[in-house]
Image 1: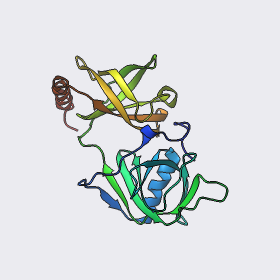
Image 2: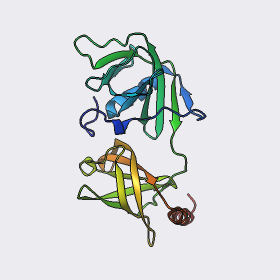
Image 3: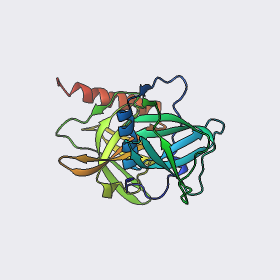
Image 4: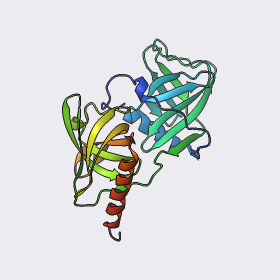
Length: 251
């Protein structure tokens, strides 16, 4: 069943654009791997963006259930949504990658008396494009770096677990993640990246998913992209990352 992290139907801000032409995704063709990926999407409850080949408008949905044995899955459309007949492209974020496949159905018949539930067969091929354009640097062991900000009058302080020139990764308990949805813009975030390394910046949340930590239990991973960094801030970020990397020592 979908995760309880995000309540209600997917919203327009959850939409994911198809993999751009000229990108270099890799293919998944093994039915077991495709089933595992679809099951992960259903369990996470993440938004699926559906694009008809003749229409640029996006249809938002989730995967309600997956049966790898058939192989078969059920698409749960937003209330009032429908799929035009013909080929559609399905796109979603899966972990740190963009996940995409195409299906062609001349009818897209919904289940009896359930117009928002549409069954479909597994695709024969899926594409996966890792979205991390820059290498990530994990925070050193034994240190505690934080991201502090205020959203709708509520203060947040989340633990940072990795950095890159394009963004940062944070984690927290599900209780502390309330209000932190994909697409949310965070202004004037204070990043504490070590002694004398403070950066004030704007971020946009690009990933929010649950995972289980052996030590901490249920956690939420929040992946953010930097927004509107000035050249001076970019230079400072590079200096901070280089200093952190140089002090890590041999691994």
